Image (cartoon, rainbow, N blue to C red):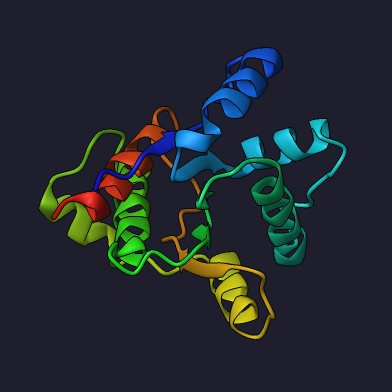
Length: 178
């Protein structure tokens, strides 16, 4: 009853990344990546993605789900996080995406990992206009897979950007805790 979540690392070489994906994807339930990693991976596979277009992002994710035998993909950005793949009824993926956004947004806002109170303060920020627009668009689309999109809190000038992906994953992992 264990779910395997594998988060990509953009800094690894293409050769190593491709080897890891090809070797381990059958054992993964969820593959995670940020939007730059999605763009880079799909471009190197001759299937470029425009991260400003939700339709293009979803087409890229469809392509990766055909390429790698994972159940789903989590893609996170400054504007939203998205699960795309098979339905996982026993896991609250929306809660995981929300906590990932909140924890990484709080780190971006204050420059360190946040306390519960500091996370509550982050909830006072407006939602990302891009994230809200994509959330509205996705409800009107016919999709090949289950999609859960959660807008992030918007920050014009984040104080800190190092480690935000790792912080997102820490929050995302909470959906696997029973």
